[in-house]
Length: 249
Image 1 (tube, rainbow, N blue to C red):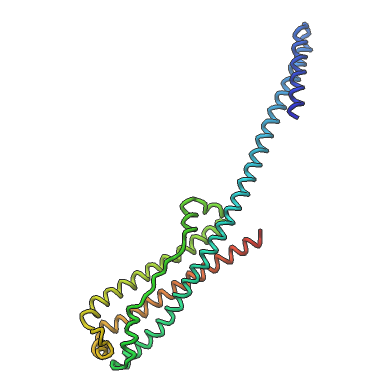
Image 2 (image 1 turned 135 degrees about the vertical axis):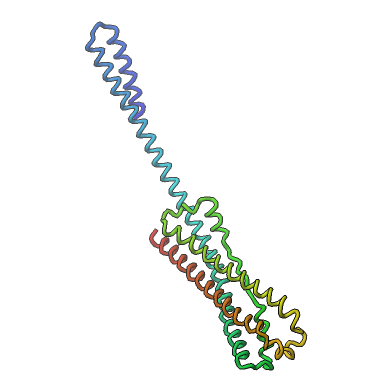
């Protein structure tokens, strides 16, 4: 079509020159009008070509963005699986620890200070976990701006909100570690002979500090358990959302 316009332009230029060689005013105006019509047509053709090129470029860009988004989804799914595995282990440990702490509290309530179980279960007061979340993909999404590849606002918020469930875990674990450190330094070290814990439990078991520590650990471990469970549930929901998105595509 471009060749056709070029041939038309050349013919019109020749006609315009021929008409200028005569004194015919009407023929000259007619040739100029045809040339202007051609020029307008060529401009329109160029605009159409630009629009088509932009549309093709945009389509290609969208296609590449979808491919990149799908890669991120695969990586986010993998991170979710690994975090769920770690959190599930910690949740199960917390559940067992709560049971053991409850037994320890019953021994104190019954004043069974000479019960061997008291000294054995006292070591639970020093046990703790530290969750190390895997969030490399999410950090890359957030700081690169690629989180916007998820054009669905609800999905984008779901991703962010899921990873934000890790922060309460960090806070509760930090409080737990501080309490354990204080208990070890302020009570165990000055009051308990570690080589004879079974023999000395009837002494330290009566201490208010010891009983309060048992009650405190019951609270903090329950908080940890609930935080683990909440994060697991959120991660599973996110995985289901990804699965639905893949099925819809």
